[in-house]
Length: 315
Image (cartoon, rainbow, N blue to C red):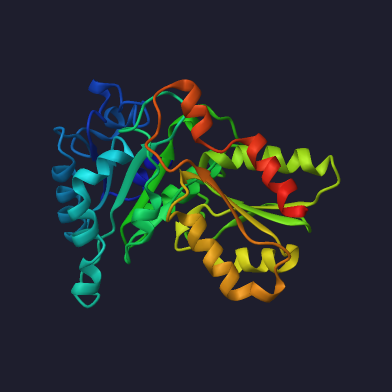
C-alpha cells in the first residue's frame, strides 16, 4: 500500500529488484504484487540476480533525481553490495558538501522462525547503524510499516527498511492512509513505572505479551518501540528509564556488539547514578542462525525469556 501510494503521488518513485514484477508474482513474498500491472514495468523493474547492479543502478538514479526503492531479497545478501551501500550511498552527500543527495530506499527481509538457516535470517542492523549517513528502520506492525515506508521514500538520505519474514502474517491495526511516521521517533506502546522494555521489529509482539503478563502480577512495564534503529530516539528512551530506573533491551540480532550494547552504554553514561539495576541486554545467541527447529527456537529471545528478565531486574 505504501509503495503504491508513493508511486501514485510521486512520478519519480520506481521499484527495482529480483522477481518483483507480476510476471514473477510480485517478489518472493508477493509484496509488490499488482504494482507492475498498475504502474508498468518501466517503474517496477525486475532485475538480474545481482545485488551490486541493483544498488549501483539505484544510487545512480537517486543522484539523477529519482527516488528508487531497491529490493534486496534477503538481508544477508546486502553483504554482496556492501561497498555500494557503505562507500557510495551513505557518503556521497558528505563528500559533495551537501550538493548530491541520495534519496534511496533499500527494502530487505530477514527473520528467524521459518527454518531458512544461517545464510538467510541474520539481523545485521547494527552493521548499518554504525555507518554515518544511513538511516535504519525496523517496523513492528502494519501501520508503522506503511507510515515509515512513506517517510523513507520521501527522505533525502539513503534508508534501509528491514522487514521481518514472520511478520508478513501478523495481524495489526490498519494504517491511516497518507499518515507519515517521522524517522528517528520511537513510540511508547505501554506506560509504566517499574521497568522500561525497549525493542523493535517482530519481537515487539513478545515484548507486549510479556508486559501484559507481568501487569497481571502487579508489575508496571513501560514499552518502547524504537521503530527507527538509526537515528536512535535517545530522548524518549532516557526519559522513560529516568522514570523507571530499570531498562531491558530486546532484539533478534546476536548480543555481541548489537544495538542493545549501544543503548546500554548511552543509558549508563546519562543515568548512571539514577539506575536501580544494571541494564539487561536480551538477544540471540552469538552463533549463526540454526536450521534445526529446536535450535532455532532456542537461539532467539521469546516471551518466556523476556518475562524472566523482567523478574530478574526487579529483584
